[in-house]
Image (cartoon, rainbow, N blue to C red; front, side, top):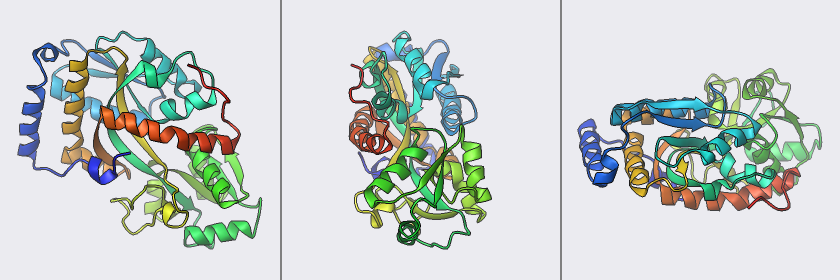
Length: 334
C-alpha cells in the first residue's frame, strides 16, 4: 500500500489548487469533456449519518461545484454493504452511477459470505480519498497507560476484559480479534448493532476497550472520556504524533480503513481518469484536509492503480482476521 505520507494531499495555496483544477479538467480528452451533462448518482452501501455517508456528502458537494452537475448521494444500506454494492455492480456503466465505500465490501464481505458478484472484478477503482487508523482506546479507569501494559493486564485476567464491537465482521470486531490471536489474549467481544451504543458502552465502563475507527471515538478521546493508547497505522498518525503505533508493541501489526470511489466495470476510461484527477484536486483542498483532520482522518489522493494495490494487500490481512474470528468462508464466490 502506498504510504500515508505519499498519499496525503499537500497543503497547497488556493491559487495553485485552482490552476491544477483547470489543467486537470481540460487535459484528459475530448470524449470526457461532455461528461457529466446530467446528474451523477453516487451509491453509498450504508445508511445515512455514518462516517461513509458524511465523507461521501463532503466530496459530493465539491464534485457538484467542480462539474456543475449534481452528484446525488443515494444510500442503499443492508446486508453489511452487499445490497448497495450489488446495486452499483448491476448499474449501467455510462459514468452516471458511481460507488463510494470503505474497504469492507472489497476485502471483508467476499471472504465472509457467498456473493452473486465479485466486487474486485465488477467494479473499477477510480481513486482513494481518505485513510484512517484504528484507534486502540480504553476506559480511563482501566489502570494501563500503554498497549504493552494492557496486554499484560489482560494476560493476568483471562476472560475478564470486555471490548465493544459495532457489528460482527466490522473493523471494530476484526482488529481486536486479530490482535488477540497474535498476542494470545483471552477477551470477551460484546457486539452491538450500531456504533453509537458501541461507544456508549465504552464511556459507561460496560466494556473496557474499543479498537476501531478513530472517527468513532475521537471526541471522547479529546475530552478525556476515553484513553487512546495506540494507532494501527504503519507510521504515527499526523493527527496524533505522540501516540505510538500498535506495531511499536506488536511488530508487523498494521490495519487501516479507507474510503474510495469506484465505477461499474466497463465505464469508459476517459471518465475514470477525468474523475480520478478531479478527486485528487479536491483531496488537496485545505478546507477538505482540515475537515477530515477534525475527524482524525487523513485526506489522500491515491490513484485507481494505487487503490487496486491497496485492496490486494488488504485481502490476506483480513483473511487472517476473519479466520481468527471464525468467519472465513472456505471458498469465495467467483
